[in-house]
Structures are given as structure tokens and as C-alpha cells.
Image (cartoon, rainbow, N blue to C red; front, side):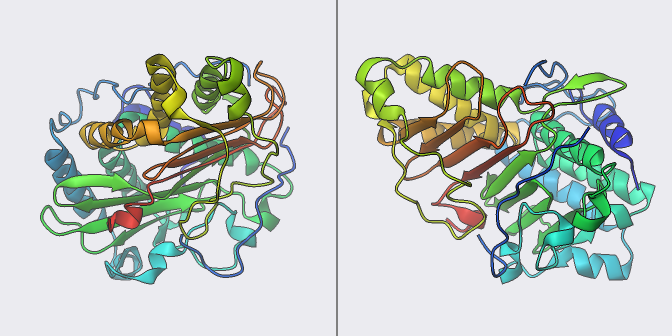
Length: 372
């Protein structure tokens, strides 16, 4: 199994720009399988625009090219698997198992995740898996995934790791439908604090639902100090600190949710509060869009651009809600929600805590699992 350092090394090789343990109050496990701070991180490009490593093929220049490249990389990965592994990795396109994902670690999860486990793959197979992820996501998206798994490697050194299943090897990749340049298919990669669900249909990549979390949120290795989610903290602070008067007061939520309200459950909007973006200035709406882009930009560049344009077109009908101090201290929570977008971000520990612990979710209720 690749150690976290090797994981990040592969990230550097594949994509230019990649880069004591706390007790963890995880969200409660669902009764059934369900559908549905400090230093900056200089090595991770926050806009998804990092240049491609000259050793790899140039990135496609349109959304259809991105979808086709992902299909080729998926086929290359599957070609490395034996018959048993391939049967586990490729499920029916319309299988309900696609809803079997969670942010919980494997040791306390009540069901089996889909696909093949990274820790069960040999080095050649792991390299092909990483190559697929680097192709099917943006450089920023792949770097973000690498950071989540690297942080899991820090938890892996804890005395609790064996009991709860903290391990950088406990991440699974599954395909729903045979990867194809013409037919629809889906892929899912996840484990503790991570669930990426992407769909490829009609030459376009979409993403929903996707859970991103991390613990520790700040960690160090031979390359330096990493704070991978600080961009999301800064983006939320930029929005709330741009507001004033009645708009700022309306954006403040009376209560902080105990957990992400949309969580890992079926899609459906809980009635969030907050301020209507209809009352925001153009600059304030742009700050909200910039925050949303940090999730959308996990997708390949051109598909992400299409998605951001769709969000921007309806942004005035969306809402922004905030709970917590706006000075970069304490625990914060914010939500961006509208008819076509739902993003929740929550620091489980106060900002600046020794390690930190973060949960977030991104959903497009009009296109969950690419069926919109």
C-alpha cells in the first residue's frame, strides 16, 4: 500500500501543483445505506488552473474531450485488474448501490463501500488509479483528494486507528456502467471524510453529491505545513465580512447545526435561513460564487465552467447563511443554498485548533448522480 507521502509524491508526478491527533466527533451513521488554521497551502492551485505536467498528455480543451479522456483513463485502470477485482469495480449503471457512501471511517460503517480498495492494489494498479483520478478531475480536485487521504495517513498513526478503521488504504473506487466515450457512466471514490460522485453523460461531466472533510485540517510532512481547506475558510470569511447593516444581520443564523443538515441523506432542502443574494451587490455575489467554485472546480476545467455559469445565472435566487465569529477564530459554519446548489461548510473545531476537523458537502439537487 502506498503511504501518504508516496500518495502526495504521485500527485506531484502526475499533476503540477499538488502538494498529536484529536478525538473525532463524527456525524451519526445512518440506519441504512443512504443516498443520498495557520499557514496557507502554497502547493495546491485554488482555481483549478494549474499547468499540466509536461510528462503527461495535454489536458483536453473542451468538456467532451474531458469526458473522453476520463473514459480512456478508466479503461486503462480496469485493464490492470484481475477478473475478481474488475467484477468488484464495475457495477450496473442503474444500481442502487451508488447511494452506499458515507463520511464515516470503515471500522464503524454499517455497510460495505463499493468498488476496489486502494490498499488491496499493487503499485502498478495504484498508479493507474491515481492516473485515472488525475485525469477525471481537475489538478485542484486531485490535489484536494490527495490532501484528504494524506491527512488520513496522520490519523492512521493513532492508537484508535485499528479500531475505527483510519487508514490511507481504506478508500474505494467504483464505476457504475462501463466507462465509455459515448454511453453514460458514473464513478465514485471515497472513504473516511471523502465521497466523490461524478457522472459522464452526453459528453459532459457532472458532480453530485460530494462530501469533503479532513482531519487533521493542519498537518506537516517533509514538504512543509499543509492546510488544504484554508481556502474554503477564507472564502466564507470573505463573504460574511463583505456584508454590513441589515444584510449582514439577516445572514447570521440563530443556531449552528450539530451536523451538516444535508449530510449523506437523500437530497431535499432543509429550510435553511440566511440572506437572499438578491440584496447583495455584484461584488458580494461574486464572493459567493468564488466560494462555490472551490467545490465546483473539483471537476475538469471546462465542465466546471459550464456548472459555474449555471449557478451564476440563478445566484440571485440563492441564500447565504453564516454562524460563528467573523474574525477567523472559533468554529464557523456557512451555507450557500438555492434551487440548483447546496453547499455546507463546517469546522468541527475552533479555527486555529492544534489539528482541526472540517466537514463539507456539495450537491446539485437537479442532477444527483447525473440523472438530471
